[in-house]
Image (cartoon, rainbow, N blue to C red; front, side, top):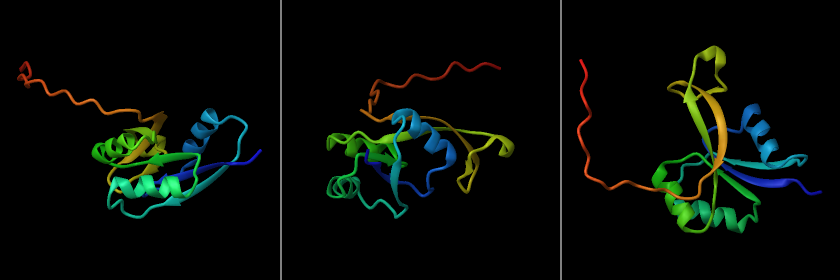
Length: 124
């Protein structure tokens, strides 16, 4: 069985936790992860890179607007859900804070609520 070829577009290479979560998505498979940490000039470049490289899957760590353009190009990337954590519990440090990886999700669409904002109920 051939390994799953994944384009990994993130400043950070995949951690042990990322790999463990990929194993949940692709049980029993090996991975050929191509890490590209270069700056994303435009989401279309990521889509073109993904398609021309004949990758099986795509992981992107980028802004919501970049992810939205990628999805509009009929590519559904994986994203990681992180939360800040204590250093002792963290999976990695992003240069600003320690992060713990909660899960990988497939980014399918972005929904923006354009309703008129209401003030928060202030409690003193």
